[in-house]
Length: 277
Image 1 (cartoon, helix red, strand yellow):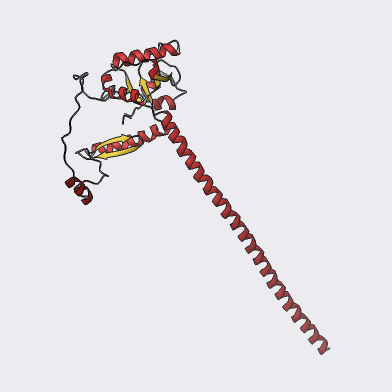
Image 2: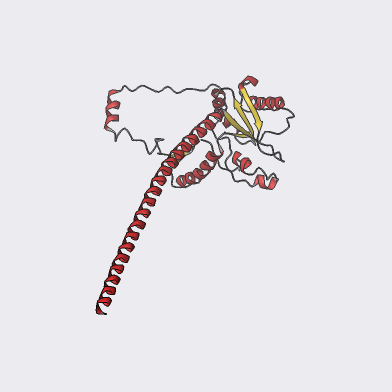
């Protein structure tokens, strides 16, 4: 009887040992399978991450190309504000803008100088702004040089910027106002805020006095007197912005944002930002 009990105990011990080994083997198999799955997932995730990064870079490059193309497309544009909306056809509008440029800006242009012209926004009680695309960049520059003639009038003009640039410039305008309160001279160049010193040198630029290379160049160069150009036409006209001080005039952004709102109350309460660069 004792021998039988011992035999049963030995069998029980062997079964327990086998059970433990089976459990350990099962744990090892489970661990190995889990590790293999994790490795596979990590490998796939790494591939997906590389593809995502590649797509992200491609999208960023495409956005830059689109922004560049949009900037180029608007390069010869000027937006005119306040011109009465009395035209009945495209050619009538073209003649009106040419007459306005001749009478108000004292420039002689013809239809060959205009590539495209159109009003933007929904028609309402107030005249909509006119976007004019000129045939040459020189025509645009000439008009911008004469925009001071519109001072103290209901008319004014701006460069044509994409919507995202207008929003960026609106944010920069708030920062520019804070800098002016500190006594700094600032200007907004496209989508950048440039802070100027009192001598009209940019703060971020290295001055010749602090740059030894610049001092060497200055010492070796010959100073020549600068001849100032004297404008013969309209010497009596002072330089000024086209927007009168203290007068609120809506920007093109208000027409782009509030396309569904055309009541006079909403148009007159649009906060405007002087976006002249």
